[in-house]
Image (cartoon, rainbow, N blue to C red; front, side, top):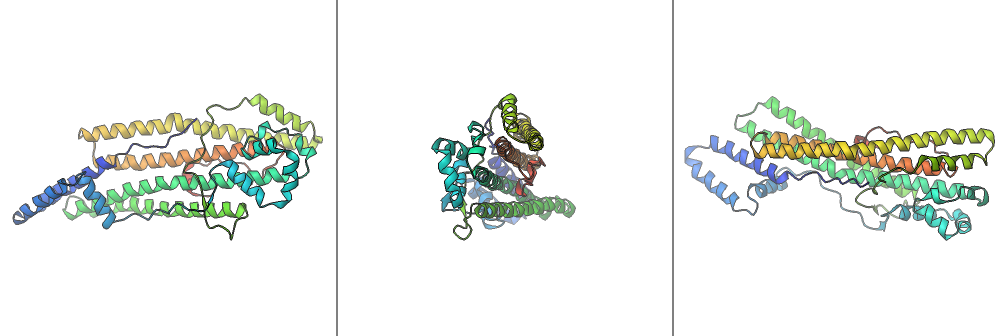
Length: 368
């Protein structure tokens, strides 16, 4: 299942609407002697390649810039789960022996995250395999969190752009007497909130990257690592539950009764977390994002037909960004719960399981 987070780009339309409205307001309050100058300036704007959209873009770049975007870090590339897993193993020299005992094929399966294809009986035959798996799963979780927080940044910036555009338009309307300062204060409050959310999201992304570097034993060697632009695609369908149950029973048969009961409890919790997170991702894909896309398209059509205002477009742009942030959080939680489930099926015991608190927490540290 591939979640494509590509909200409809209505900014050219919004930009034209903002500048056209502001020019119209200016024309209403322009002294008669200055009318020729205003029309001349308006004609000059019209000569730009994209008309009023270019004018607004210039204004935003020179008058009210957004927070600067972080440059893409260069250095060590960790673009896949396999990359981060193998890098984590390199920091633990004591794992050389169990890695050599497992053999190339099993090592590749673990590194690629295909743990259910590995014989759980190897835990008894390969000393140190439990530590090898724990190192892998902790690195994998840290990587998923770092990728998710960085991916969400673009949506927080988009929400801020919409809020800043609304604030700018509101200020122009106040200047010409069409709006009260109370209305402008309400719009400015939204913009301030969006700006603070972006600051929090940027901090969370930086912290997640630092946590990943520390987990990999790279602190002092790298300040940044290169991550993929988005989380991995999620599976279209869940694997058969019976296969997982059989593997869990096989492990429990090798354990003393008390440990077997504890393993069963861990398996039940891990399975419940995975099923719930998959349901949330599926709901996001099949309902929320599709409905948001439909609402955005209809709002744009209404705007083009002069049945909706530019404010409606700006509101939908912010709502669309939030929906994508929520979807990123749900996708992150699915992959983390999948890592926990595979670990349990190999005899592992996570300290805690993913808390499906909502995708809007993508900018905050996940509780694992």
